[in-house]
Image (cartoon, rainbow, N blue to C red; front, side, top):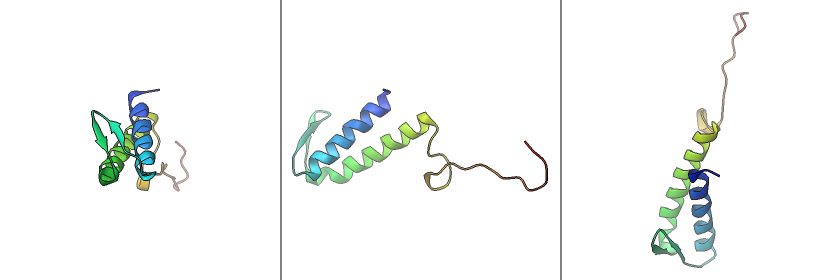
Length: 75
């Protein structure tokens, strides 16, 4: 498991905990419902890093894409 995957897991756990009404200690501070937007921002950042590492999610709207050629050539 890479560092990015570990961090994403931690942010997901924090988000679930806060949404369940609990507080959670994370990176030396206690996070509560008031910190939910900050947690989600961090989760999205780490999701992007994990996607970059795995080569997934590059392209338009997070979807991978390839280019079609219609000139009869291959390659």
